[in-house]
Amino acid sequence: MEPQHNPYGGGPQHTPPSGGSPPGRPPWTGGPFPGAPPPYAPAGFGTPPPRRRTGLIVGLVAGGVALVVVAVTLVLVLESRPTRISDLAAVHRAIESRYEQEPFLGVGEFDGEHTVYVSLHLYDVHGAGRLRKTSVAVSRLVWENVPGSYDQVAVALSNNSDDPFVQVLSTRELRENFGARPGSLTAEKTNGRNATLNRAGDCSTQLDYCDSPAEALVSPNSRVLMERTCRQVDWSEFPAEPVQIRNHIPEKHGAESSMTYLLSPVTAPEPDYVTVALIGKRDDFIDVTCMVGEEGEYEMYSRADYADAAD
Image 1 (tube, rainbow, N blue to C red):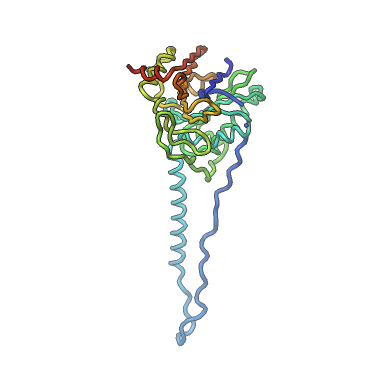
Image 2 (cartoon, rainbow, N blue to C red; image 1 turned 90 degrees about the vertical axis):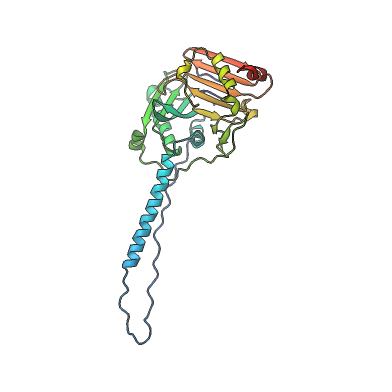
């Protein structure tokens, strides 16, 4: 099946810039420099006995332990916070820079595993061996750029000639392959805005990955329109959360906001998905796109259709 191109930017699609800069080593400086003892004693008492340094040594040891505890605590706090959608902005830049293609990125729960998902179409990478090598390289970019905690990374690669290649690596395998994650990783900065009817909320400041969908995308009305369009979807198994939310630039994508649900397992070579895109116009208000197996459905709904959907 050829890659599906959604004109509104949603879904595991592939569009046409690569490489993340390698993270720097964590800064480390020496300990405090102890001051010199007084050069002489008070008059009449002769040479003073050597000063006991036990307190100083204990203080230095305690201070060093405290610094280590603080550093470890910061790492644990960072790594214990589950990776969020907004955290994908950094690896998006790295992948796009290296491969000159825009990836589809998502974060979601699959079979109880918190998963970072990457789907990428590569026009100039051919052969199973090169696809496998590229998959490992993409997984490394995720490992070196995405903060927070996750259980696994799934990479799905495709081109115009070979069968799609999918690889899933656990965090244990990533650590064994690439070593410890860089200590310089920090959570992606977000704008902190609340979601509105037409706009997603709490979006990354550099790219448009967001942690809260626009209200119109998750209302009872939009759910009715999704079920009306995607008749081939098993709604009893429908995921509770989207894997991707983006707040688009209208001039570039034509949609104010969108979100995508990944329906198939992350190991599926050709993913099933549902994308809902908010256009925001009177006649073109919401677009629903479904791709399940070989069946694709697409429907555009007006503002009136949306308003009447839940009646």
